[in-house]
Length: 94
Image (cartoon, rainbow, N blue to C red):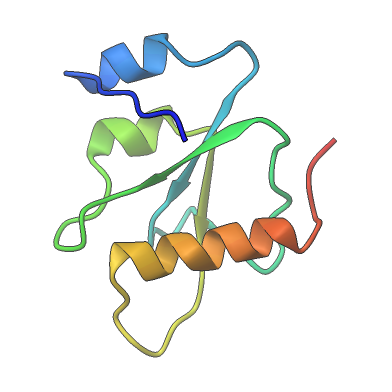
């Protein structure tokens, strides 16, 4: 699996492959429920730190924001696993 390191969010954003969409995973009013979200074919998922979530800039630059219901507080690796599982369910955007 490739690993890329960027010093700033702008460096990351400006080096995305053409056509890549950013999907932010964040509990906001504007976020769409994961249950109804259709995943873009080419995308990057952003998950924030467990204590304070995504940065304001990351939220603003995201093409989509998604959230999901949980009775428990989940760590970021579990949240990411849930999002990837949902993607594998076969609901990609065309």
